[in-house]
Image (tube, rainbow, N blue to C red; front, side, top):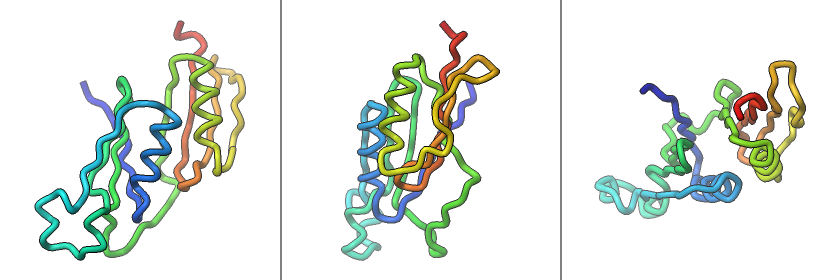
Length: 138
């Protein structure tokens, strides 16, 4: 089965962001630092606590992330969104309320013409989230 997963890049605050997402969405996080990798010998001391690779897994939800930024630096844009399809309206409301803390509610939750409850937001890390619950899925 083909699936698409989000991979987020941060500039030194990957651990904070992934801990925040786990608090909002639940799941298990794993972190691999640069200092724990074979790259450690070639990196400056201040980068050894940076996150080389992180995963947040809850059921079929998988978010991956890293602090590994290219030489050009981190460029945030609006071309990537994280689509969260929730399994209940309660989960949708809870996730929206938690993710929007410190961020911006760009589209509050509302009933849609396509039979869902939908909303979107920008979280405190500048990432765009689309949240959806299909009321016809149960």
